[in-house]
Image 1 (spheres, helix red, strand yellow):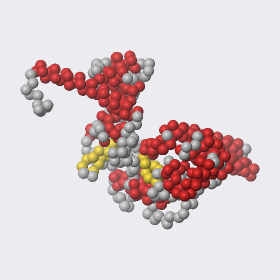
Image 2 (cartoon, helix red, strand yellow; image 1 turned 90 degrees about the vertical axis):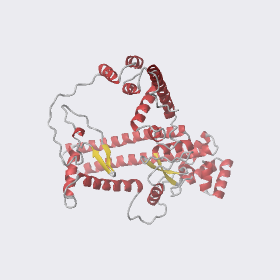
Image 3 (spheres, helix red, strand yellow; image 1 turned 135 degrees about the vertical axis):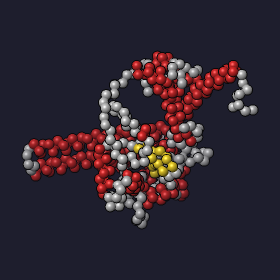
Image 4 (tube, helix red, strand yellow; image 1 turned 45 degrees about the vertical axis):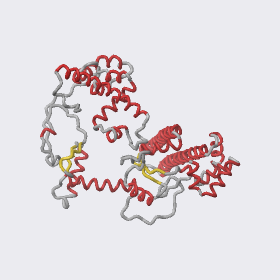
Length: 462
């Protein structure tokens, strides 16, 4: 049966059928939004090897980017105000209207505003919002806008740059495919960026006499990418021979390991779902220890991998628990705030000393000595804060590893505190010392560790 050949239907039957399918479509939209909302809050896209709900909607559910954005935004708002689900399912509110309302709904106005928007068109809802949430008038002005032909070299459509009275909102950067391997790029730059472009064109005038923006842009990207790859992946055209481990920090990753892992993983997250789907993310990539450092993981080529930030956090939560990772993230936020305060206080002290010196006229030897002393105090305070932060991280890892081996939290914390005097030892030695302190159970584990090797025992502990 061909469901799409309807020429045989009587007018009345076609009219009733259209009303029915529209009603069913509204109901389906409400149910889809409810599913997206719950799927999103449970973050079920993460174990399916997707870094975001948007990625899952586009690549698995087959939605367009715009459709995914709109549905996710409305679904999240509907979790906050469940009446949205019912209004959409019963046809009182369409998806576009809900999307417009989303940024204006609050606990105080939600019920009244949803009622007022019921059965209204998109234009009517826009008028309603303009009345309830008025914005300032745009300034009235007529300005001559000149466009340099060298800045928009591939634009032939005059409508893409309309001249309009009043300020025009700066468009988002766009990259539009024009033909095979040809793209149009459009963006607005400030005066400083414009001056840099002109200077780059003058520096390249021997090799790029035309000063063509695509050529300058490509060379600038080459230089930027080269610099970023050196910073993030230790990339170099002349790698030095790998040496033995020189850093005492167990989290330090040797440059040759970064280069090898990056080449093996091909600049992409390596997380794989149970169904065999590999994450497609190439953004926010981080080096991750396959076995946690706290349980003996080492920064070797086989012991490291690339994960996007979302899946790095997800894997850590699977190993250490979501509560533990949330506490660590909160501790990190607090330490960052403390470090910022320390630096700000030190900077204020130095500025104060400099002002005192200037007020006194020509600086004496004593003035310079006091200024250097203030700078040294700030540096010492910052270094002490960094050492304390590193020690806290190691202690948290040790406690969690001991808990994973079956010890109670209070036992693990006591053992780690008792062994704190050995802070200069590698983390593996501190773990052994903590196990020894914990008595027979710890000694049994330490003996098994010595017999099987740190790699096997650490994996078993995990």
